[in-house]
Amino acid sequence: MNSRAVFFLIFLVCAGLLGVAFYMEHFMGLEPCPLCWLQRFGFMAAGLVSLLAALHGPQGFGVRVYGFFLAISAGAGLGVAGRQLWLQSLPADQVPACGPSVDYMLDVMPWMEVLTTALKGTGDCAEVTWRFLGLTIPGWTAVFFTLLVVIGLVMMFRPARKSGWIQG
Image (cartoon, rainbow, N blue to C red; front, top):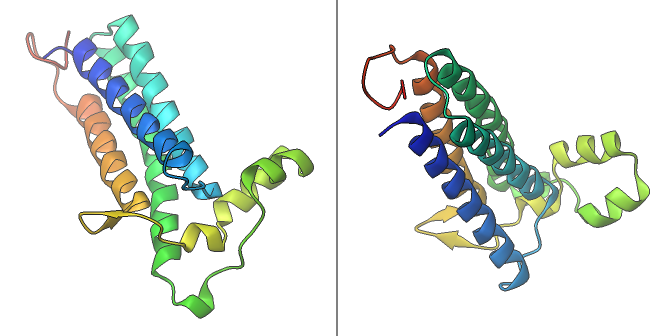
């Protein structure tokens, strides 16, 4: 499989995951917390990098550059998912207080304060509202972000070959 196809497949996976997130919000009634929004942005960034790479069709060094940006964007998302998993593991008496919704914060706070508050997480972020096969939503996002980081690192460090998905 060539790099263009791999990047396009990653784009489709990210778009699918975002579709699931919006379905869970609008049809299942699960309100996203600030850390959930940041994880969505992580998938948006990874998907955008992958779409650009698929359209560009890089070879050689270009594959490594796109792999780097894929690993960075997915790594940031993995960090946010890890933070939310940590909040979910806290005993009830140590969970931070619930905060305002992201929409409200965007209306009344400066952008950097919204980002800082979101990165800290709130009590909403510690609430487990859904599980599938024993994993919570941030557990599943951590799985997908980890896969994307690994793929990005493989693209960065795999030796160039005449044939194979890393080259063309």
